[in-house]
Length: 162
Image 1: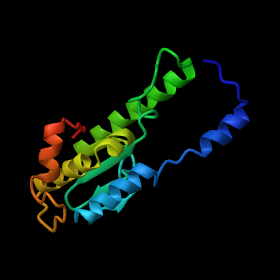
Image 2: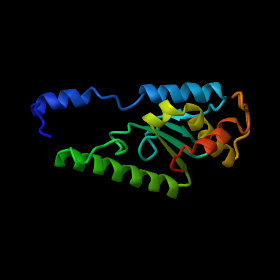
Image 3: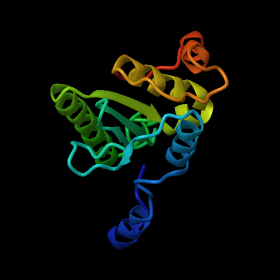
């Protein structure tokens, strides 16, 4: 696949791609608020990878990754070497960030944008489960209360790296 844009035009185009406050990230935040899972901070610069959401007290970091940019929906066979290298570097960075956070005692949850769109309740359930495991007890406003989203997530096989 040959890139038909000049480097300047490609740079301008790529600069327009959102890196934070994306639609799936905003949807997850709204659902977490509705479920009473508040108390997170956004894009903490003091943490590796700047998690989209960080529950500092409970040491739970949440990332909402674009599936393409993080290697989930990427056709390696059709991509140029530049794009294979770019996506490989992103995946390696994700793994390094996950390791650094885990070494510092954090639980890391990564959801793809596709996963958030397909199973928002399951993603909320995974966050709820991680917070509960970390000792958070509090207001859970979700209709399912304890067991709702988390049991549905288990039943549907939604995955996240924790």
